[in-house]
Image 1 (spheres, rainbow, N blue to C red):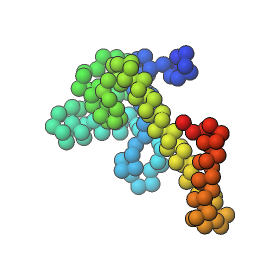
Image 2: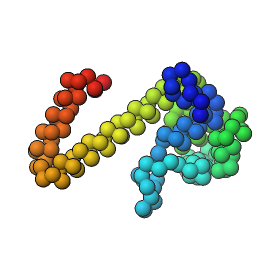
Image 3: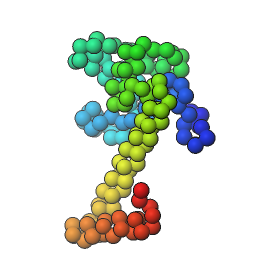
Image 4: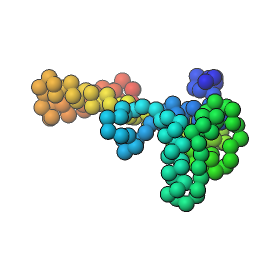
Length: 160
């Protein structure tokens, strides 16, 4: 994926925008089967299945094949039907304008990146909590250290 002047991926084609979603949006825990790895990428087949199931459920009747989704990802298909674009947006939980409007694309990209950063911060916080407990610290002491870390980050200008 090419980059623009900001160092972010250039999302100037349907294929690039779709690949961005495959790269950054992850299946929810409720979508994973037993023993499946959290944080893994969607497969093309999973997105097609998600669209087909939604089409049956909501009565739109929109269907799509995994092969067609793959063609869009590779840039072979560049002008899909509006119903397919809307279904892709629903499957990934984004505004349909993401695929056609540069301003919406930038906004959605920023929102997804921020959500991923927040998730990563939560993971780091959970890891810190686990390490502190492994050291035998109480919940109160652990909470106090978390508050201290938050305060230090603010003093260092690292928050915001």
